[in-house]
Image (cartoon, rainbow, N blue to C red):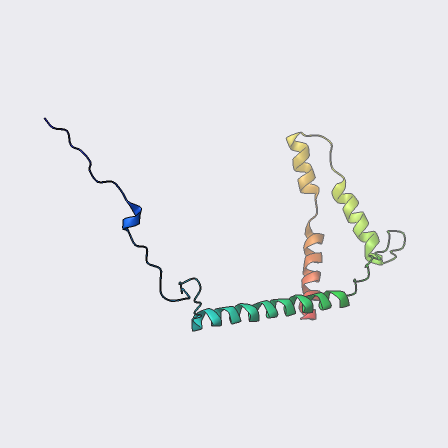
Amino acid sequence: MPEPTNNRIYDPSSFEMKLPENETIETEASVKQFSFSSVLLALLIVVLLIILGGLLWWGKLLLEDIEPAPAVTATRPTAEENNEPESTTAEAEVSVLEAQSPSDDLAAIEADLLGTDLDSIERELENLNQIFEAMD
């Protein structure tokens, strides 16, 4: 069986290379065409950056003008300074409410509960309600 032979030999001189006839070659990258939407988008971004810069500058000016508030101290009178007549009555009522039996026996707890007078608290709440209603 005969073996196939390759009688073709590549000869580069047999091919002719053709160069373009134009002097300049235009590609898509070299030709820039701006669409209306891209120009509008760029303009919008610039305007937004200017507005943002203006707001930051304005906020800085506002923060510079603010003076710190002076510290407020409470001037509540002490128990010795308070000479109001209801303060002695209130102190007496509190001392009565605080007087409880140290026992944890059920009978002692019931006696403490029955001995607690809550009527004065109800009267005070009614007085406070009348004061608040008068303020309205």
